[in-house]
Image 1 (spheres, one colour):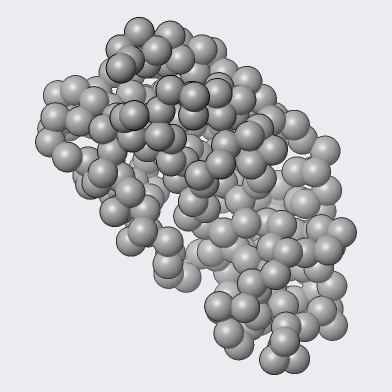
Image 2 (image 1 turned 90 degrees about the vertical axis):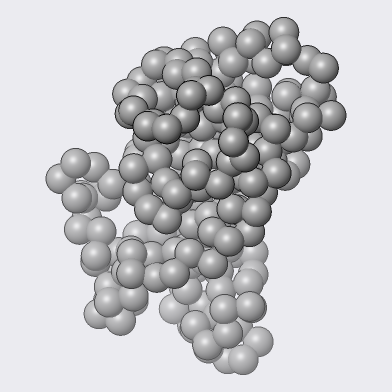
Length: 230
């Protein structure tokens, strides 16, 4: 069974009604991203950050996986599928995908502010001041904020290096370090990119660009990949 590695970004979740992380104006749903998604923001106004993510969780709970999410889950019948997502929502899980690496964390989880290895599911998907870890330290959202390292990038790079096929969905791969993952593929690996505005990928001769929305593009991808199996 061929290994299909999938890189997904905000474009796939946008079709489920989840706003993209950061608009062209640098705002995230009306907030300056540094106020709600940076260590400095957490230090300056912890209550604001906690409330912001609690509101985001409500929106994600109400959202449903779309056709693109579901097709990726269906492809597990034909491929060894590994999803690497930049998204912090759980729509891939709810669609039925079983192998998912979250590059930037998970909004449904919290972690200790003194020990990053202490990670918890958030009960009721609401995190409050006074919610502490086993070491009695305040819990924070399990999200990679601006200015922080991306600890899952190294494991993600190893996965991409083993891909027989690479599929990029809903991301232009212009933001690093995630953008660098495409450089980890073995030479000659077929790459498919589904995004309405596919940027040029210089040096890759085997890229198939499908300039469509995630849902429409994945319908096309499913047909293309299925016709190439085994």
